Amino acid sequence: MDPTLEDGLRALREATEQAKSIRIELDEGYRRAIAFAEARPENQSGADKTWVWRMDAAFRAEIRQARKR
Image 1 (tube, rainbow, N blue to C red):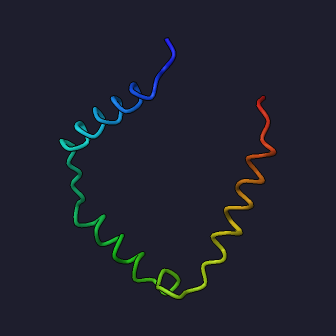
Image 2: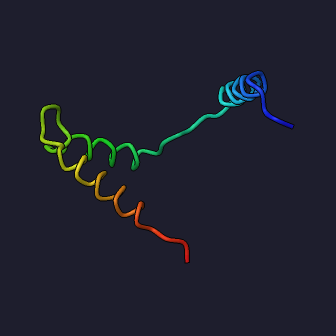
Image 3: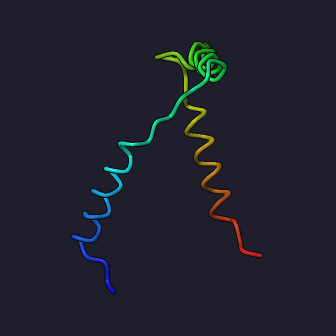
């Protein structure tokens, strides 16, 4: 059976309803770790983040070269 647009939309509606019941609770240690990471100078607005683009390009180049064994 070929999926149709209506099949896709129905799946999205069902996933949306299911997602409403999911609750994620973060413990205090995890929240502290997030606050620590967000407070670091390199994570502040205006900080140089060009390393992200270099890392992304290197990652994508590595994946392009990957071969199945």
